[in-house]
Length: 247
Image (tube, rainbow, N blue to C red; front, top):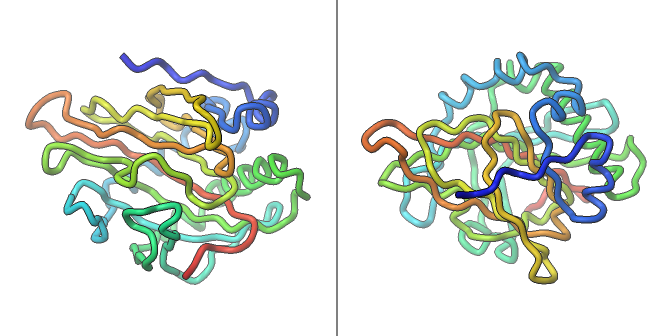
């Protein structure tokens, strides 16, 4: 059985990221850090039922649904940028890197929600502290709501395998697990053999990763109850100092 994630208190977040390069916050700590109410997070959950399919999977699968939107965060100011493609170099994503991937944007009512903007601003502040930068410096943020299903018998949260994303801070928020087994999170030091594994279970708990120092992956999911719908929903947010990645 996969172990439960080791949790970090908000007051210890900066130290944990500095020492280990990763941290896990429970839902209460996420609410405390961001100032976003638990009811607000719950209110966003229906958006995952409306995600369109990912048409770019190169392993031939049909198990991933997603949207994608981009923002610039400077202090408390959050602005959405014109819709753009998601792009990663092959150095970071050997399976899906090197070409532009266009996804449907997040709904306007979601991204215009002041609580959404508060979430991004609070996590940008974490990124600034992690890098020892001023709180009002700009961060280039990509938001990816994901649903991984068991379409075809198995779903792969990270079909590219253990990887880095080419950013500064990666935040993976667990939204919901429904009728699934698997989906274990694994985090490894980018330089060295150290690693941990655990399964994020609690809705709106979060894994934070210093992308320069660690690599990460999630194992495939399968149905717990055969022939019943199964899915794993997450929200992945990436924060980068030097602009969005592009060809």
